[in-house]
Amino acid sequence: MSKSIYVDKANVYALAVASIVFVLSMIVSPFYIYGDQEFYRLVYDVIPNLNFGDAFYFYQRTLSSNEVIHFSLVYFLGGVMSKEVMMSALNFLLAFASFRLLVNLGAYKSIALLIVLTNFYLWILYMHAERLKVACILMFFAWVVFDKRFRFIVLSALGLLAHVSTIIIFSSTLLIYARDELKQFFTGLRLNKVFFIALPLMAGAVVISIAQLYDKFLAYTDDADMMTGGQALRMLIFFGMSLLYAKKKSDVVIVYAFLMSMVILFSGDRVNMFGYLVFLFFSVHYRGGFNVGVLLTSLYFMTTTFGMVERIIEYGNAFHGLHD
Image (cartoon, rainbow, N blue to C red; front, side, top):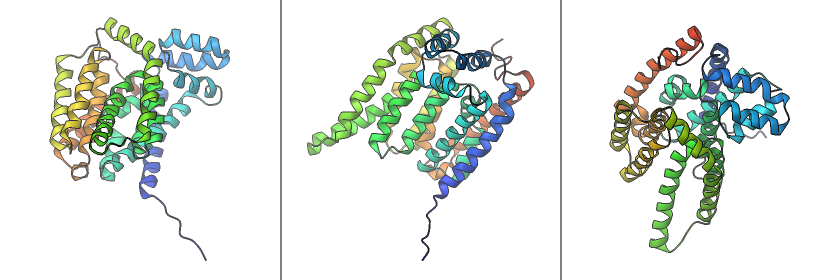
């Protein structure tokens, strides 16, 4: 007697969308050879041939970075597969996690498809921000398993170690979680044991990341890349639309207050990226994402994505001519 096999259709759709992203990455990424990619390609070519200590020193000097997880991926896989294959494989994981997260949050599959395939900030991760991409994969999978609190905390801590800027999201998430647990304690005199695991794990990850945090502060201060008026306006728009669609308005205030407080440590562009992701978190549940806020931002960022891909193919640089 045969047994029926349950297949999660969301996973099937996610695999299909992620496969499309993998193919698109393999097509576009070989064109991206200038700008920051010159340094990433140099690191990818050199460090697999060095011993571990020398390789990490070269990685630090070349990228001004201490992200151990990204370094380890390049060091151990760089001699096995090409940079394009490894980055496209990571893009596959990022697209899969993004699609599943959006569906889990209440988005229709068509909206999740639109965002994963065309969103500018996701394409920044696909093509440009390699170290942050690794962190976002961990961060998105953490949110996918949010109800399994121990897995969520472990993936969150790894995401923070992968790239220090994820402290923006994880710390605000932890504040909301801590608020809920403490509210439960004062009303029922009961605390979840995972709460006691979460605090040391996150605190340890923050302590390990302090050196990276200081380096980021110096880098963005030197580059004068603080938030401009236009970037601040965009963040306020994300905040306002999140308030419009969110079920818990207090959560919106907590998260965006933390985002704005992090502007002094990170670039305005980076904080705005997280601001948009938070907006999606609070808005895609409303009518499955078929709402004015999600549709307008999706169409806007789709046009900027096409421009970025065009610059990569034509000039070999996603930001050619934008900072002249």
